[in-house]
Amino acid sequence: MLSKLQLHGDVWLAADIHLGPNSPKTAHAFYQFLQQAQHEAGALILCGDIFHAWIGADVAVDPPPWLAHAIYHFRNTALDLPIFFMRGNRDFLLDSRMAHYVGAQMLDDQVILQTDHHRLLLTHGDELCTDDVAYQKFRHRVRGKRLQQFFLKLPLLWRQRIAGGLRKKSSQKQKHLLPAISDVNETSCVELLKKHDEHILVHGHTHRPALHRMQDTEGHNYSRIVLPDWEYDHTEPTRSGWLALQADGQIALHRLHQPTVRFKLKKPHELS
Image (cartoon, rainbow, N blue to C red; front, side):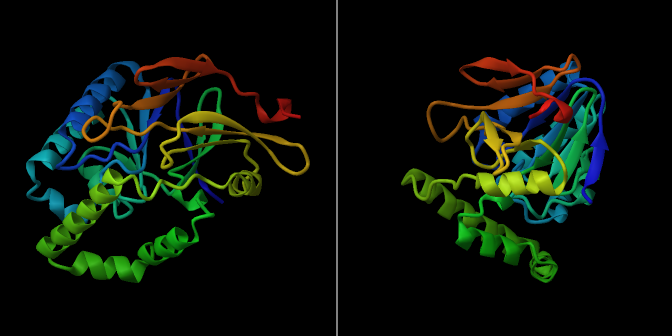
């Protein structure tokens, strides 16, 4: 059984911000978004890849400037707004210690979210990219407790160098546009929803924000909503956005430079 989270009022969801030392413009835009959420939302859920890389909670003891700014803004926002963290493929080492340090709560990798008008399954989404067999094998290895414990026991400087090397490789791949981020496998998405008797899936990771309609082999309908990613530093056009589950029952997908898309999803008993 998946853990459940019940929230009231307007619930905002964002993902794939990739905060780090090389994305100051993205960070600035995101901190402005936090201020907006602080005044307009009832709760905020960040669905993974909050950080471009995460090497352990002890990095926050004497944080570099970019992380010190992030900690300040998260703490300030958490004074007035409940914040929830999920892990992504880049910050899978996030844990409850760091979340609590900034006033947030840590969620499981998959959660059933219940709001005033909506019930949905929430995840980062990388586990649903099942066509990318090599990545799934890598994901399985790095999510193992023994490997994580070994990595976290390394001196902080060593972990910083490893993370720096990975960031460099990642930026080189982005520069040459290889490889593209794999999309989710819709059959895997439907199977996950059916397993937990849900009909709406929300995820990030793929950087392909949209509302997708899906069907299983028996003709039952399902919905999948993809959260936008954030990028102001390295590519054009700039992009960002979030999903608002509104208290009036509407769902609003906000995207930079795009008109807001508003829609309502049918409740499970109304689906054919």
